[in-house]
Length: 337
Ligand code: EPU
Image 1: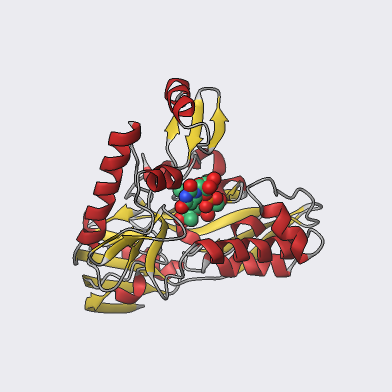
Image 2: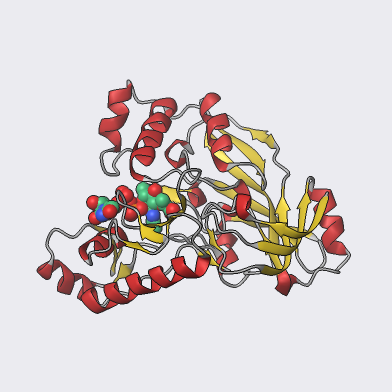
């Protein structure tokens, strides 16, 4: 376990915001983390669990304790006829897990390649890309109570996964630390999901359809569109794609027939936040040291030593203008602290 005071978090957030935490603790095993929490001397209200820091915007120094799990083992829990159940610990880099599974020709996670962040954060916002969400593969989420360090687990049903949503962002917010995630993957990959955008075309350019060619294609598409946080601070999509009802859908589609839409339920349509933001004139715009990425309007970028408030202010201007122009509310995907 590492304990530090007045600890710089610049390296631990992909937006590249230069802030400190009053106290910083990194734990290297689940047991050590449970023991720490069982002592009851950390106020859960002043505790921030930090994963890979790729979905967070710091607007100032953090006056409390940042706890960063560093345990990162992968284990095969069950080997069934068609599936394996894997467990992956919270501190493991998500894409290292995907690469591990692709190397073993296990099917399920390939579309979720190259998503930044750690395994422990994946169930919280139910990460998703190219037609797949982590919640479709996750069978169980193991946790520790922040109040007393007691272990528990939640089955997938209890996690209530939705679009960039789960029970951990709602009823259970601030109550648990996720230690380990179990996933069910196919031993002989068969059901590939290639319908999203131009994915199938890019896969076929790589060769015949395998988990490896899908992974390679997804990485290629993401690298073309999304900025590398090592070079340009960002946290991926800043907003969620809005869900609208049929009345709003009819109103918008008659005015903008070219608007990208995905039907996601009986009376629910998902529309593209990137498209709304681009249409409102923000793509590639710069405001001081904050900006909107030139290749993807949903990605806000730190153009050099911006502070979190500048980026937050830009995000407010963007959502106000989208609200005024389309009457659609944008909600943040990124956690603002
Ligand atoms: N589009 C624009 N302008 C742009 C960018 C995109 O009009 O500047 C339009 C495109 O034409 C396309 C549509 O928006 O029709 C969708 O674009 P894209 O495929 O890039 O996906 P997205 O809806 O913007 C979501 C996820 C991404 C994920 C991709 C691919 C959310 C909030 N974001 O973005 O996830 O990689 O789909 O599946 O759902 C993230 O969560 O951080 C993230 C990057």
